Length: 182
Image 1 (spheres, rainbow, N blue to C red):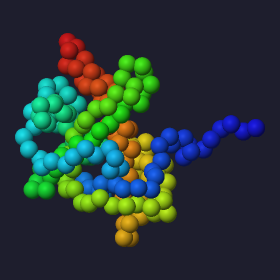
Image 2 (cartoon, one colour):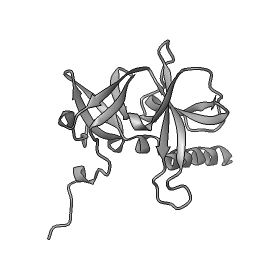
Image 3 (cartoon, rainbow, N blue to C red):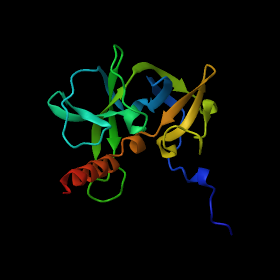
Image 4 (cartoon, rainbow, N blue to C red):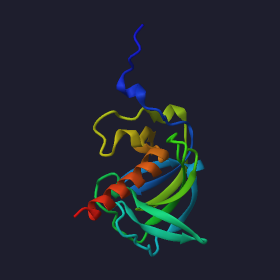
């Protein structure tokens, strides 16, 4: 019995039919499942936090709560998002599924900076293609599928991978240790 699986099948999270919020980022259209979206706000002043990874642009006060704001373009390793008239912050609810016992299952709100929010769309199962295993400009584990819509592809993102709290915290700690070393 052969127990090895092709690399493409090792993808743990796959896209499902449903409603997705679409948005623009550096000329590309992306989508997040609507159930992970808490709200959308206009871009406003961020408070910068020293010694954070470049992709964490700062924090906002959202009704008395401190919410970190991630520059998604920078998280993808493609530079910083230019702030313009339609720039928005999408507040996303993430769940830490790391299984480490300390934070597993913890829900965290994180803001993401996008160039512009488009619309909420229904994406049927027949419109979803598997995520590419190569050639993408972002890490393959960040993509759960590609949706075909009106002759274009929409990159469907794995919110709990893109905004993995443990990974982002580890990057922040590594940066802190770099600054701490003599």
